Length: 51
Image (spheres, helix red, strand yellow):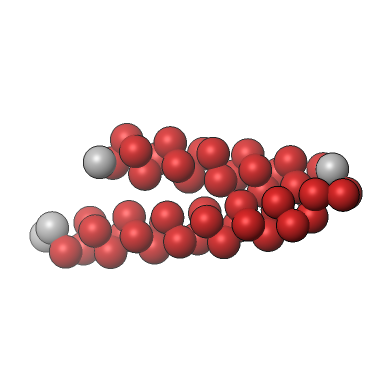
């Protein structure tokens, strides 16, 4: 499960960077950041609940 979360975080970070690099895809950066934060929060919550 941890591997999946890390892979998703990397994908979302790449999407956010691409969105900022390509000016026409600013929406992609916003989606990437939202998904990155959501995945990070989910991973932290999941880790906290398993303790």
